[in-house]
Picture 1 (cartoon, rainbow, N blue to C red):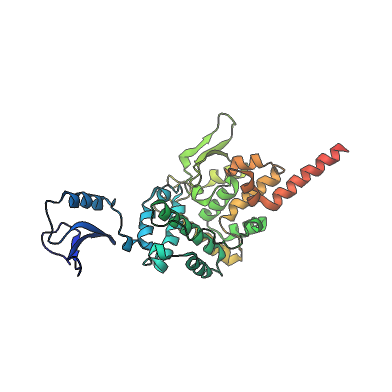
Picture 2: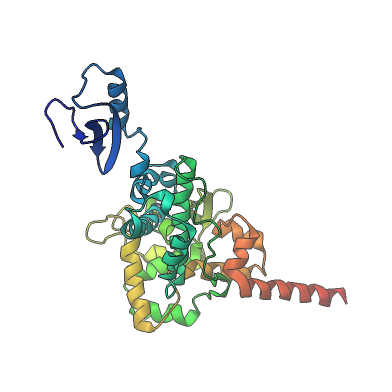
Length: 346
């Protein structure tokens, strides 16, 4: 109930035992305030709590600690805002919205591991999506443990669906030739940039013309990139093929990949959708992220399995991740090196 004399966002509600109480409510958050109705204008305790509420610093009542409220707090937390890549935040947002739609009104303390398992089962036909959902859910409830809403994260210990990343295959030369044959120049350029730089699509979309330089140290033309996901800074020398492609590419805006009409930078959803349509037309099941796998496979073959050289391009922080990306090609290259060494030994 709203009554004159109460500050903005403050209302009162009935209580049979102790009389009407007052509470602050804004953006779906509700906090019980010190004092009772009628409102005491001279209460320093009330005004101190009111100031916290306006800043979003007040503790949400236990009875209001829903998953929806936790999601709001997580979105405002450093854990979420420090996700480097904008595309990563958008990806998380998608799963946060799903979690909110399915269980936003459920109290956090009543959400248990069986509930997580039941929600996971809904993704049995889309296992990678289910695994992403578990990753985001675990992050949200970890924040719940950090702010003291719960002691145990219900997402912990829930097994993900088997990860088939080791079986992911690179795009073949035939795949690439066929997609170039029907793709527009912009989509073809995206594919070539991904393959020849080994970067994630989100970083490729950040490439700018004015960042292309000639290295005094190597004499190679290339570009600096700070990876959105890892924050790692790399210099990426261009291959001869990529140099020729860029020399012939049309320059419209600041970014290499841009809207031809406005010159504005293109975002991931638009590019992903365009390439997905091309893949569907040709029956190519590899994804746009598999272009990064393709780069790793090519590097593994060209360097005879030298993981340090591969990491210098892809930016992977450890050889285990390189092995996930290059798998069979890396094994073949290393096996070839081993046999060559054996031949020389004898």
